[in-house]
Length: 395
Image (tube, rainbow, N blue to C red):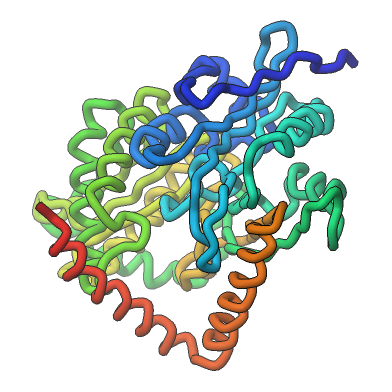
């Protein structure tokens, strides 16, 4: 096996599209770690809307001009534990809800690609390398654990924590066979039977850029409505996030990946699912519904339709992505976990780590002492309190 000898570090002034969108997309489809959050369809719009004040530090590994590895990262100035540090993180980091962020690599070349990337990574000007959203069993996570064992290695401290559970359904057998094993099937059948008898009921699925325009606006409207009673959504909290999703939906539709479902009743949108296909996987990214129709379980009915269609398309997996919501537990048949790995280097990083550790310990103690219902009420109150300040900041 030949060695990947040429590694290119993209300069800060280079746009995120420096690896051609086509070769990047192809690598994302080939790579064992590839997913909807690691392709140009998602990350180019992400950088457009969230890249301000950040420096691009993406690493490309090429062999004979061919792209065989890509580590999409940036560097920013941030405050951790009240200490200002230079923080390196994955593109997609933050509250857009990206799971399984990782290094892309040619299949079978993971070890040499990550060795090249790590060699360059330690040369970049960061205090904290903050890799959040890694799949716990990913090759990258395992290699980082070996390269930076507990304690200090080459002046670098490593620590980590478990982040999110990601339930999923292996799409084996048929939809009918799966439905027979579903605990809520009788309730689902009753809801479907009632709903589909109503006038003006239909389901649409936007796949093309033209259809995506209307479907995206309907999704945003329903998502806002669903979360308005909870004080707003953490993942779609402002115009910048909504603008990002308008752009991302267009790019995903152009690539044939978008599955934006809308359930209509009385010819009005009452529920929406923001779905994305990557390879043989359906990703259930987000949803929304009209609270006035919540008692009719319109979200449940539309979820069932998306799972049924995933079986019909011959897909292999239905991924609910992050979250431990009760309905995901009802429908899923397996789960994965994401983790956060942090590497701390230098005096400022150590000070930030010490301060942040005390803060995290205090938060963990509060969470452990409070029941889940109380925690949900606190989160709701926090979102509600944010709204007046957001309004005051608007021009």
